[in-house]
Length: 188
Image (cartoon, rainbow, N blue to C red; front, side, top):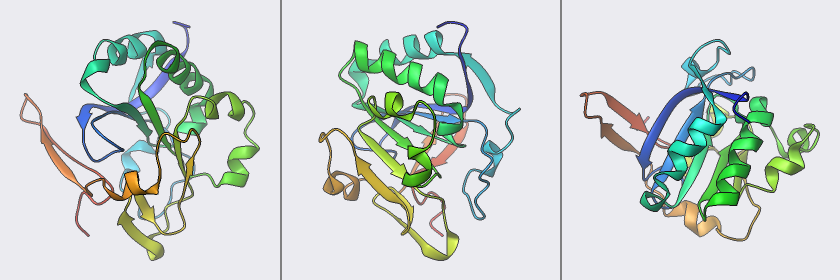
């Protein structure tokens, strides 16, 4: 497994706005969907970010598992790295009670056609599917636009859990860096 690498744009070890409860958030690098109006266009290039070996990322997450409720995978487009993502989420699922939430710009019918998708979905509690559409901007309940659809795959969460999530947070790192995140981090 050490040979499998996930291309990562950013990691945030403690977020309250990227899923139910406190979350460990991984934004993957690379997205060919390039939705107009996307909040994270810096994640589009596949050659950006940092390649992190799956075993090291899993170890980092699991070493802190008592500090958060779950892991959120956003992007970029996570499903364009399905093999590495499946391995990561399988390790997390097998070694903790952490929940998992995955954002995808693909629609449910497109997702169903991705080779290996059932193995990934078996490790996911919530999948948020559909391309961001600026003309249908919603920015609440973790839904950027009204066409996005949540799929509750495990029964662990419901729409009410998503509706209770704050829309934004500003995080200040120990190095003075500022990260604005959430479904409406710019308050547009």
